[in-house]
Length: 111
Image 1 (tube, one colour):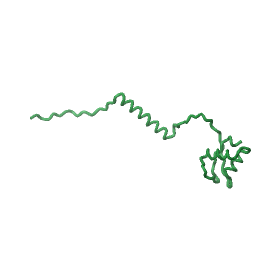
Image 2 (spheres, helix red, strand yellow; image 1 turned 135 degrees about the horizontal axis):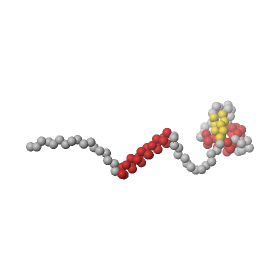
Image 3 (cartoon, rainbow, N blue to C red; image 1 turned 30 degrees about the vertical axis):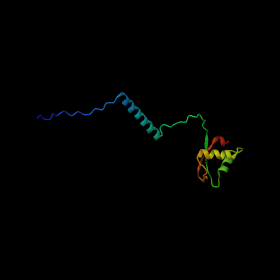
Image 4 (cartoon, rainbow, N blue to C red; image 1 turned 45 degrees about the vertical axis):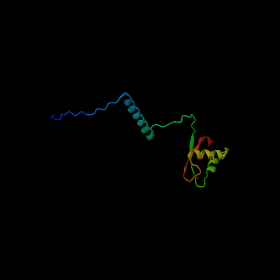
């Protein structure tokens, strides 16, 4: 009988093909972009070209309503349009305003 032959142990080498290197590179770039988007360092822009509207802040006083605020900040403008704009800018939905609440009012309504 013959004795078992001891072969030297070789460490397995990692070999990447060209396609494998491309996949690793693309995956790392996508992971980096995901981290940057999640951290808020990069923002996705719709790019619709809509002009930005200047705004002002109004603090809601006791007894104020959106209607009254709309009349105060935009005399001579239809209050329904101003109330709608204030609700949209502040994401209010149908919620009422409360004293001390700070509202962002579009400047075009503050003429």
